[in-house]
Image (cartoon, rainbow, N blue to C red; front, side, top):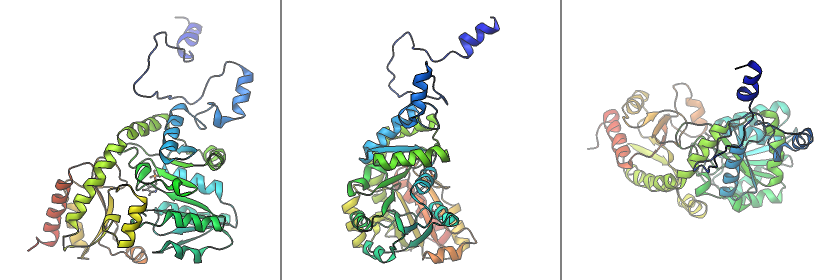
Length: 394
Ligand SMILES: *Cc1c(COP(=O)(O)O)cnc(C)c1O
């Protein structure tokens, strides 16, 4: 084959319509960086309005847009933008909505990297308070004239405490403040924050939505106006772009999300109802085991339970803690969660006692994620490791 012919017919051939029509069961993965334009005028019009035209995958891509439309519908929002990670979505949101002189109020325990990011933004003149409250109304006393955003999780990372979404919205609207919730714990099926007029929902797709510990992704969902703004600045300029293949894997995850969440919601109560009886466990952090006030909030805002929780062991001996964690056979040691496999993540790393004390946590605080295994076998796994480390129950 002549070189010219090779380039024209094989190498640079632009995607042409297949002669045989097909409708795939599974959506297309449009794995392309750039999009072809047949004439100059169309290209000019498209590049002037990238959010509504496919020009370059750093902006929009059909596979990612397919996922965005599904997530927007699931959350009941006007629009969604998907990112390369949950932190990508969080960073883009802070970058877009905050400016010099703004104050961010962070309520209760929050994903550590999100707190670290706003604290880092102090060099740009953004201030932050992270405060612990048990009643949502207590937040009022921390609002200042500079407060621009209330950022929270419900249930929260680490302690899995709920806040009253409707009360937060009311408080924020009175003071002209954005409300942003990280809704990763419950995901889009079990809680609908936008129904309570929260401005933006952020999700890490790396957890339940991906569902198989094989992707990192994030999303922000809200009004056309806010999400367009975040697209224009936080997405386009910071560049945390989801690859079409990762977006496709998230779409695949959505197909089984209802079945997985309904299984996990039941399985977690089965597991916790047994663990709560074990005298070697001092405390369980999960809405199912919370105070009456927490149970009321769970009833009001959650239509089911996520399966990420934490425990404090009674015994504070570090050596025994190591024996316990190392003798779990089914549960694996590892970060993240939301996939098939059950995971354990001790909070104590041998040098962060003070950090835990600041949050009111003992060194025996351990995060656990119940995966899709039979909860009975996870219960037995935890029990046998407790027996080895702390002695069997008499
Ligand atoms: C994992 C997680 C994040 C960060 O998401 P990545 O996809 O890992 O960047 C944010 N918030 C919560 C609650 C998370 O669990």
